[in-house]
Every structure is written in C-alpha cells, then in structure tokens.
Image 1 (cartoon, protein in one colour):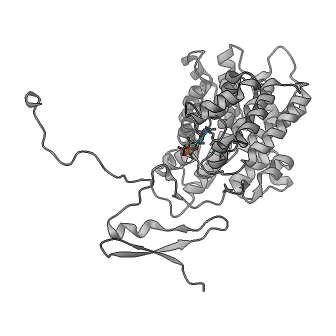
Image 2 (tube, helix red, strand yellow):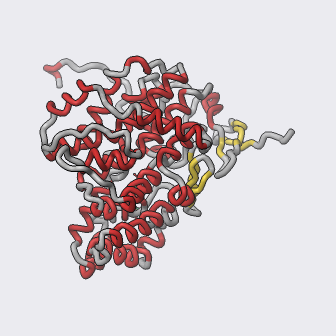
Image 3 (spheres, helix red, strand yellow):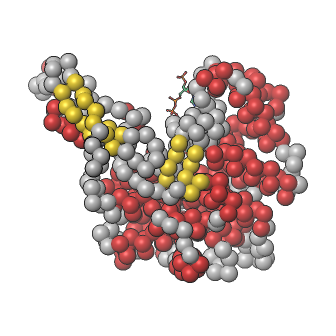
Amino acid sequence: MEKQRTAILTLDDGRSLELPILSGSLGPDVVDMRGLSKLGMFTYDPAFMATASCTSGITFIDGDKGLLYYRGYPIEQLAEKSDFLEVCYLLLNGELPNAQQKADFSYKVTMHTMVHDQLARFYNGFRRDAHPMAVMVGVVGALSAFYHDSLDINNPEHRETSALRLIAKVPNIAAMAYKYNTGYPFMFPQNKFGYVENFMYMMFGTPCEEYVPNPVLVRALERIFILHADHEQNASTSTVRLAGSSGANPFACVASGIAALWGPAHGGANEAALKMLEEIGDASRVKEYVAGVKDKKYRLMGFGHRVYKNMDPRASVMRQTCYEVLKELKLENNKLFELALELERTALSDPYFVERKLYPNVDFYSGIVLRALGIPTNMFTVIFALARTIGWVSQWNEMVGDAEQKIGRPRQLYRGAAKRDFVPLDRR
Ligand code: CMC
C-alpha cells in the first residue's frame, strides 16, 4: 500500500501538526485541513482562493491550460458532437446515455415541461417591467409550493423527479418571464419539439402563426446551453450546495443559485458585456476604453476569471458560434462583433492584461450570439440560469448522496469589539 503523504504545519510556539495530503484523479493535490481544530485554530481564506469545499466527480477545470471537462469529456467535443439533453443526462448520472436511456430521459423531461396552472398566476403579481431574473428567483423558488410529492431529499427517486422537473420547467418559466414582460400570451410547450426548439417556440412563437425553428440558430443556442451547463464550485453552485447542506428542498436551493448568478461578476456579466460593447460603440474608441480599464475606472466585462489564467475554452467555441450565427443571418459585418474582436486583440497585446492573465471568458461573445438570436439583453442571464440548472441540480444531488455531507458552516476571524458591558441610553 502506498504511504499516506502528509504536510507538517509548525507553529511559532513549537506545536506542530501532521496533515494528510489527498490526491484527486486530475488536478492539484489538496491538504486535508480538518485536523487543524486539534490546535484550536481555523484556516483563513476569504473568497475561497485556496479552498476545496467538497469532493466532486462532475466537472474538472484546469485554469492554467484552459481545459474544461464534464465527467471527463472535453467541452469542445460535447459542444460539437452532443446535444443538451444528453449533456444533462451525463452530468446527472455520470455516463453518456445509450440510445434507449437517451430516449427515456428525453421522454421523461418532455412529460414534465408543463407547469401547474396556478403557477402562471404568480406572474401577475410582478410589475411588467420587473427584471426577468427577479421573476426567476421568485417563480423557481415557488415550485417547492407545488411539487410536494418529490421533496424527500433522502429518497433518490424523489431527487431524480425533482431534477427532471427543474430541467423541464425552467425553460417554460424563463419564456413566461419574457412573455409577461412583453405583454404577449404565454405559450404552452409542444411535445413535437426538442428541448431547445421548444424553448425558442415558447419565447418567439405566438398563437397566431406556426413557428418554424431555424436549425442553425437552434444549434447555436444548444451550444450555449451546453457551454453553460456546469462549471464546478463557482459562486452560484457553492450557494446551491450550501443551501442544500441544511436539507432545504432542491427548488429552493436552485432559486438561491439563481440569485447568486445574477451579479455582474458572475452570470450577470453577459448582459454587462453587451452593454459595454454598445457603450464603446465603435472600434475607434477601443484604445480610449481600454485606457479607462487600466486606470481602474471600470472592468472589461467578459474578461478575466478566478480559475482560468488562459483562454476560457468556452470563449473559443462561443467566438466560432458567433461566426456561424452571423453568417446564417447575413450579418457578417456585425458592428458589435467586429468591436469585440478588436477589443480582444487590443487587450491580449497589452501588458496590463497579459501580466494579470486576463483572457476573454464565456460571457464575452455569448451576448453577441444571444442578441443575434433575438434574445433581449435582460434575458441573457436568464439563459445562463436555464442552462446552469442541470449543473446546480447535479451538484446538489451528488452532495445529498455523499455520506460525508454535513451542514456547511464556515467560521470567521472576529475583529469586532471585545466583551463590554451594556451602557444605558442616558449615559451614551
Ligand atoms: N478588467 C480589468 N481588470 C481586471 C478584470 C477585468 N475584467 N478582471 C480582473 N482584473 C484585474 C483586477 O483589477 C486585479 O488587478 P490588480 O492586481 O492590479 O488589483 C487582477 O486583475 C485580479 O483580479 P481579481 O478581482 O483579484 O480576480 P478575481 O479572481 O477575484 O475575479 C472575476 C474574477 C471574474 C470576478 C474578474 O475577472 C471580473 O470581475 N471580470 C469581469 C466580470 C466577468 O466577466 N465575469 C464573468 C466570469 S465567467 C462567467 C461566470 O463565472 O459567471
């Protein structure tokens, strides 16, 4: 048997502690810090810059090499050869489905696409101009008030049913948020359509005309869904796991993930990146804009990543998808795309970005594709949430099934007032 490798921690008071070193199947080794409590101490790692919060077998990222694998399969291969429902099955179950498993899974998802009719009434409670992410947080959270028969989180069958319900209903809920916003009637899902086509139908179809999906555009959106499906322990996924660690139901946990995703440093970056391109307006203003970034007046949205210190592999696929979609729509001379290419060129040849290893991330080009597909800017982060639902629910399912799982409870470095006695009001 191989000898357990260890790290020795020596304190300045002479005490020391031997801590096990653990190896994953890929990626760097980790020091198992759990024994540190024996010294009455904690680690201090705000923003989890150096902390692995769990064991997972779902997604692997090598940020230095720019690699992303779902269950071992490189993202480029999945984006080119697979489809979104197959990727959902893979993330949830660990293996690609065979033909029968794929057909069964697709059937089950299709059978869960309708939402309880009462759920549709929630929308009337929102202002028409509410941000659709606000609607998503509310309505997805409300699912737990409807589907009581799949809420026993210790029952794997209930967990699977909840997962299917989430994957199936989120496109419908997202499209309803858009329809409510624009004043068009809600469209019921159509079983004749595939998953992505169905979402496009519910978004863009009307009761007055037949909707005929464009296969090139369906494929582009499918790719966006695949690229966003999971990304290991990011802010929203960690939020889902933390919420789930208390035993909360999966619909509530996914709603917490949607809330965390909304911020501009995370999923909100796709909306912010497109707004930034519009604000720059013309390639002639790129140098001036980049100068403002270097002066720290604002950040280049869609650039930089906590883990990738190389090209985000999703950004390369997204850039290629941009070419394909714009060609299909005869928008080859798209001004925003040209501007984005120029911005990327300028940034990648500038020492500020090179030294800090700041490269385009998935959100840099996705907004251009989504805009070309006719998706309004305030729906961009909703698309991200729709696609990430499978990642959240897979990570939640893995965590609940993990025997080592306990409620998540970080500690703190307290720097507040020391103990003091209460002072009555007339003496303050
Ligand atoms: N533009 C300009 N400077 C940047 C940027 C940027 N986009 N990102 C990081 N920096 C600089 C930052 O100012 C800092 O410089 P200095 O060392 O001089 O203080 C250095 O790079 C390190 O930045 P950091 O904030 O410590 O890095 P982080 O790992 O905490 O932040 C990030 C990661 C993604 C929040 C950040 O890069 C960022 O704000 N990017 C823009 C928002 C964005 O595109 N987010 C989408 C991320 S990918 C999709 C997703 O996760 O949802």
